[in-house]
Length: 117
Image (cartoon, rainbow, N blue to C red; front, side, top):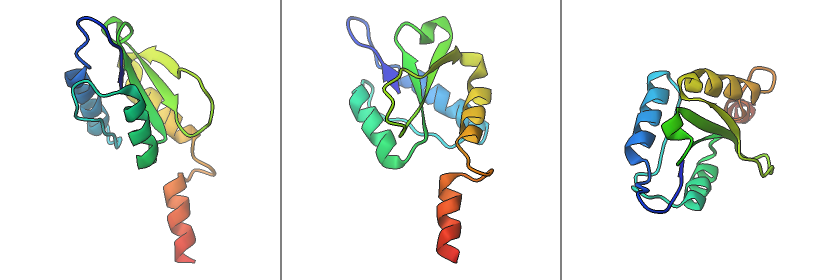
């Protein structure tokens, strides 16, 4: 997700593509909206509909400084997420995904195993 606006704002499409590619290369499923200047609310709505557990947010001032935010979705909390160094993205996402597991199992696997019974 990209967040910003005003003069010179281009929506960080190339940057969002790069972040998604980095996550894909690390074996982490990810997606992004393909619109060049996607509305932040629409980005959050799409992520929630898709069942994404995390949002990676590229801020207009933060991303050029080598920082990125990771926000846990579906908690009902209204926070900005955790600000991390871009170089730590894969490690931080993996840690957050692992923390969301219950007894070492993610929600989807737990739901699917319940269908087998």
